[in-house]
Length: 225
Ligand code: CA
Image (cartoon, rainbow, N blue to C red; front, side, top):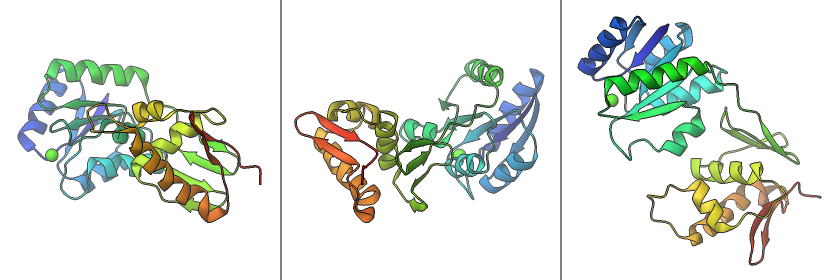
């Protein structure tokens, strides 16, 4: 199995490569983001071990670019500390698993083998509600032919609502699914973000697809008009 390590801490990359080679893997190392992306594009790797904070281009951008090019090589993300890596953002962008540094080599090896057993993930399917479409793999949203730019939080919120289209979803459920438990949050935040979303997916198009169900929550529907 052929692995790419994208990691700018060279001692760490070398130590990891030594261990993995001893365990029978073919290993290449890239020490900056752009080289990492090029290698990932052209090197036909079975998996990539990817640091997030990299010179040149972040691990986030690398994943987003690869997935946007329909490259579904399994990616194990390494993050320096809690908080640097937002798990929901990373998994939205198409990372397959992640480890927080410092990690034990034995754990990394086990997670890597599990990833390789699963193989390349299937490309997630595009969600559609009326003429609103969301592509979880490419991280894009469109109303008809118009592209809509969303923040990662707005994107997560819309994705959850689209996966539960035509159902009433209450604010607490949205808070649980879209915000991390560690964040200082309040249901008011959901109202604020629902407002942001409406301004992007409905108002410019004269739609009312994201409805408030008084006392119950929100419902996303295929707008009848
Ligand atoms: Ca780094």
